[in-house]
Image 1 (cartoon, each protein chain N blue to C red):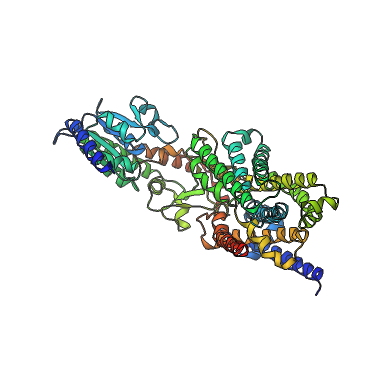
Image 2 (image 1 turned 60 degrees about the vertical axis):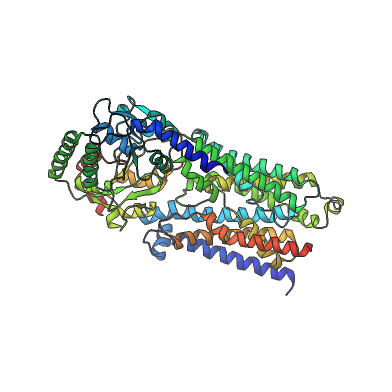
Amino acid sequence: MTETARYRLLIVLLAILVTSLFVLSLTVGPADVSPWQGLAGLFAGDDSLIGLVMREIRLPRAILGLMIGATLGLSGAALQGYLRNPLAEPGLIGVSASASLGAVIAIYTGLSALLPLALPLMALGGALCAVLVVRLMAGADARPLSVILAGVAVSTFAGAMTSLALNLSPNPFAAMEIMFWMLGSLTDRSMTHVWLAAPFMVLGWLMLASLGRALDALTLGHETAASMGIDMKRVQRLAVIGTAASVGAATAVAGAIGFVGLVVPHLLRPLVGARPSRLLFASALGGAALLLAADILVRVVAPGRDLKLGVLTAVLGAPFFLVLVMRARRQMA
Amino acid sequence: MTSGWCRRYLVAGVLCTALPFGAWAGEAPRRVVSMNVCTDQMAMLVADKGQLHSVSYLATDGSTSALAAEANSYVVNHGLAEEIFLMKPDLVIAGTYTTRTTVDLLKRLGFAVEEFAPEASIAEVRANLQRMGKLLGRQQRADQLVAEMDAEIGRLKTIKVHDVDLALYYANGFTSGSGTLVADIVGIAGLENLADKLGISGTGQLPLEVLVLARPDLIAIDASSERGPALAKQNFAHPAFRAVTSQHQAVQLDSRYTICGGPFTLVAARILQQAAMKLDATQLDLGKR
C-alpha cells in the first residue's frame, strides 16, 4: 500500500471512530433514556422532555467534546511542527492555563455578564500572551528544553493568578471553581456555549490548517524553508493567532484540559509518515475521538460525581509524557 | 531547632494570662465567642444580653445567615486563633468541621471550647438548642425556643397539601436527600422529596437531565445572586432548566434558612408549603402527564 493510500485509510478509520463516539456520547447520560428513544427524540423536533434533554443538554456536550478535542489535537500537532519540538502542546506550554486566566478575569469581574463576547476574547488574549512569551523565550532555534521551561513558568504563573482571582472573589462559590478552570469539564454546557466558542475555534482551525505546506518545509530547517519561498512572518502569525483563537475559545467554555495535544500527534505520527501537513488533519480527528471518549468515560466511571475531564486526560497523558522524556534522554545519550 | 522550646515557653506564658478568663465551674460564661455561622445564630437566639461577645463574619452575610441584621451588633471574628485569644473569652463555641486548627490551638492554650456538629434533622436542632441553653446557663430560654418550634411544626403538619413532588435544586446542581435537615423540612411541609424517589441520600448531585425527565411539580432553587459572579448558579440559566421552569413552578428558597438549623429553618418549610398550596390542579396534572 502506498503512503497516500495508507493515510487515506487512516483518515477514514478516524472519521468512523469520531462519528461513532459522537453518537455514543449522545446516548450516555445520568438520565434513564434508551439510546433509540434518545436519538429519536433528538430528531423528532417536538417539545417532549426527552427531545429537550437531547437537544439542549446532550447535543451541546457532544458538539463541544468534538470541537474542543479537535482543537487540542490540531493545535498540538501544529505547535509541535512549528516549534519543532516534540513536547510542545497547549497545556504544557501554558496556553490553556493562560486562556483560563483570561476567562476567569472576564467572568468573575462581571465583564462577561455585560458583554458575552468578552469571555472568548479575554481567553483568546490570555492564550495569545502565553504563545508569544513562549515563542520569545524559546529563541530562534527553539530548543526543546527552553520551550518547555518557558511553558512551565507561564502555566505556573497563570495558574497562581487564576487561584488568586478566584480567592479574591467575594462569591462563596468562586473558590470551588478553581477545579473547573484547572481540570476542565463539559457537564451541563448549553448551546449558548457552542455558539460563543465555535466561531473562534473554526477560525483558529482554518489558520492552523493552512500551515501544512510551511510545516513540511520547516522540517528541513528555517533557512531551507525560507529559501523555498515560505514567508516565516506569515507562518508565525498564523500559528500564534490560530492557536490562541482555537484554544482560547475552547478553554473559555470548558476549562483547561491537558495532554490531548501531546498524546494524539505522537500516537498518529508513525501512522502518517514524516509529513506534518498530514498530521494536522489526522490529529484533529484523533483529538476529537480522544476527548469524546474521555467525556463518555467520566460519565460511565463516576456517574453523578462530576469527575473532571482533565483528571482522565492526565491519568493517560502524564505517563505518556514521562515515556517521551525517557525516550528523548536515550536518544541524547 | 528551638521551636519546641519556644512553643513550650509561649504556651506557658499564654496559660498564665488566659487562665483567669477560663470558665468558672457552675457559673454561666460571661464573655462568649462563636466562630461558626450556625453556632453564631443559635448563640444569638439563646444568649442573655451582653453574654455573647463575638460572632463569625459569615453571620453578618445575608446569603448565609438568617440573622444577619442581628449579627451586626456583635464584634465580628474570622476564626483566627490570635483574634479569638485577644478577645479573652471564657467560652468559645465552634463547629466540628470548620476552623479546626484554631480550635486545636485554643484548646491547647486552655480555653474552654465547645463544638457543635451540624444538624441533620429537626431532632438534632432541638438537642443543640438545649445544649446551647445548658452551656450558656439559659435553659429556660432554650426550652422556650424549642416549644415555639414544636408548636410551629405542629401547625405546619396539620395543613393538608396535595400530593406534590418537590425537587430541591441548589447551585452546582446539588440536592438534599434523606438524612439531611432540608429533607426533614420537606417532610414537615408535607411534600414528597424527589431525591428520595431517585435514591439520593445525604447531599448529592441531581444532574440537570434527570431533573428535567423527573417532572417535579415544584422546584425549589436559590437563584438570588451573591456578591460577585460565579459559575455555580449557571444551572438556573441553562436553556433546558428554563424550559422546564416555564411549565413547572419554581420557588425561591433562600439558603440562609437551610444552611443552619434553628427556629428560622421552619421559615423554609412555610415557604415550600405555601408554594405547594398555590399550585392549582392543572399544574399538578401537568407534572404527572
